[in-house]
Each structure stands twice: as C-alpha cells, then as structure tokens.
View 1 (cartoon, protein in one colour):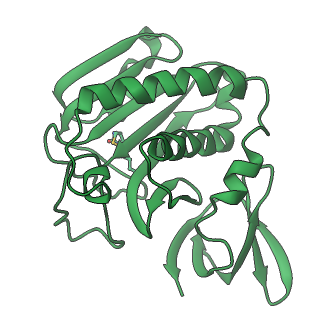
View 2 (cartoon, helix red, strand yellow; view 1 turned 135 degrees about the vertical axis):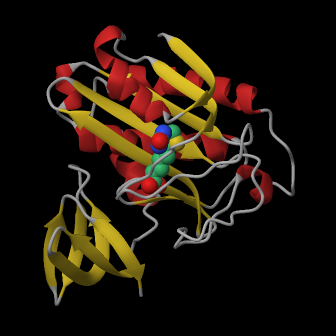
Length: 237
Ligand code: BTN
C-alpha cells in the first residue's frame, strides 16, 4: 500500500482525482492541512492545521468501484470501530456516511469517483480540535479529545492505527460484502427517528426502520416501507 503525506494541500480528495492515473489501487493520502477541504453537497470542510485526521484512499479495482455504497458503509464501519477501540461507547453511523458520538458529528466521509475508473474515499475525523466555529455546520460537532476528557492525541500515531485497522478489515471485506450488516444495523444512528430526507427533487418524511443489506435506508412513510438509495438527511424531527 502506498502512502503519501502533505503538510498542506488543497484537498486530499482533489489530489487523488488529479493523479489517479499515476497512482496504485489503495494509495492513501494524508495532510496536516487542506486549503480547500470539501464535504458533501458542495459544503466546505474546515479543520485546524495539524489537529485532525484528513485522509483519502484510492480504489481502482473495478469490482469494488462498482460497489460504492458498500465502500461508503465500510469506511463508516472502519471509523466507528477505531473510535470504539479508543474506548468510546456511544458511536453510531448516520446514514449514508457520517459518524456520530453522543449525538454529535465526529467524522464525515465523502465519496467521489467515475465508474469504472476510480473511487476516492475521503475521511475527515476530528481528533484534537475543540472549537468548531464554522457557521455552515448545521449539526453540533465533537472530537475525540472532547469525548475523552480533553486528552490530546498524536495525529500521526492515530493515522497509523486507522491504516492498520483498515488493512485488517479490508482483507475480510473484499470477500464478503455482507459481513458488517449486523454491525451497521446495531450502529444505526437514525433508527426509529423521524427524518426529512431530500433526494434530488424528492422530499421524503418518515420514520427510519432499518438499513438493508444493500446499504439502503428503509423508511416508514405512512405505514409503507420505502427503500432509499441516496439522499441527504436535512432534519431529524
Ligand atoms: C462530509 O461530512 O460532508 C464529508 C467530509 C469529508 C472531508 C474529508 S477531509 C479529507 C478529504 N478531503 C476533502 O476535501 N474532503 C475529505
């Protein structure tokens, strides 16, 4: 597995997008700071220099690029398991790919790609940051430090832990897309919550019943279960 680190870059996702043709499958890129970090739906992703984990990995294996929703859930499982290994016990996955601790967002995942050529998974995980002033943040944020009584973490060491966990999990995951099914169901932040979801021009209001084995959200809308493959949760009622 190839690793590239930048002190500063526009965005680790953008770097991989520009360079994917010259890079190997499973290249990992990390940075201390991003000048144009971005999140889903054209939002910006701000992270203080050297305080957080900013990483992206590249997938060029066509069979895996095709299964991007599994890759997205896999990445959320990876971060959830990492945080649980740090002793946090109220970690959950907010479909489609945020990680929450005690009801606050600690990590966001952004998938970008062009089938069949490549898929980029960008992960922003708040480690030592303790103030979040960005007005674009619609949900309260937290960090590992805030959840661990102000304990400071060594960013480089934590990246090594995540990459090593990635290697362990990835080896299994490739063979069995369904192996984290139960884990995902048990860590479903939205379970039984009433939500508003926007998918293109569709607005959906209903109660979340489950995440199925295709990583779709199952929503109860007036007693009918509707399967949702993509969209943005805009409100939890
Ligand atoms: C979101 O919650 O909207 C997703 C945030 C993803 C942020 C990460 S940080 C590393 C990578 N580079 C980027 O520009 N974005 C992702």
